[in-house]
Amino acid sequence: MTTSGTASEDQGTGDPEIEDLTDLYREYGDERLPPGQRETDRFPVLSKGGTPSVDPDSFAFEVWGAVDEPLSYSLSAFRDLPAVTQRQDFHCVTGWSKFDCAFTGVEFADIVELAGVRDDAEHVLFHALDGYTTNLALDECTRDGVLFAYGYDGDDLPADHGGPIRVVTPQKYAYKGAKWVSGVEFLTGKELGYWEKRGYSDTANPWNEERYS
Image 1: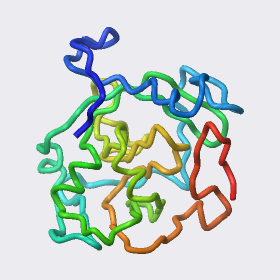
Image 2: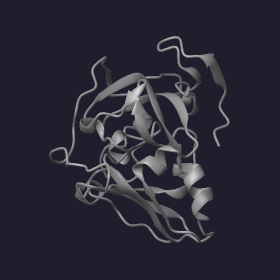
Image 3: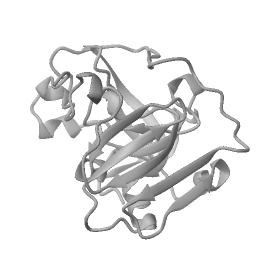
């Protein structure tokens, strides 16, 4: 579903056909690093609690709400869906950014098409195995770069970074990208997520420093 250009080969890993979305920042200004952020080569681990235990044999990814076709996939079936690999930047609300992350996964827009999302759907709520939730407007989710990611830098996404599946949202602070995501609910009205209910920004634009409401 992505319309961005692709490189024939990723210079860092040798993976064929990786989509480079690292120029997304140009929509918001001239600086790739958002204000108040510092670049790091590390990938710190942050979450509201510990890493949940996941049984890959019983794991299910589900889609429900304002859809014509509710969906349920085993982990292996989900990984059989058409996938892309994208080079993205990752911005944490705590003040660090990691450039050039290579995420592999299923585009959000593909799930919209498979589920037959209804015309009256306007928002989504992501649900995670640890009880975490986060919300976004539907039109933010169908942008290039929003993935249900299960791969990172050529390997499986590590459990402490949200494996087996997490959401990535390169145009937002990373708390909008739920780790250990178990499904997505399509809503006709807005419902705030875990951090949004606790004072974090609902819009979460890094280039506007929308950290808190």
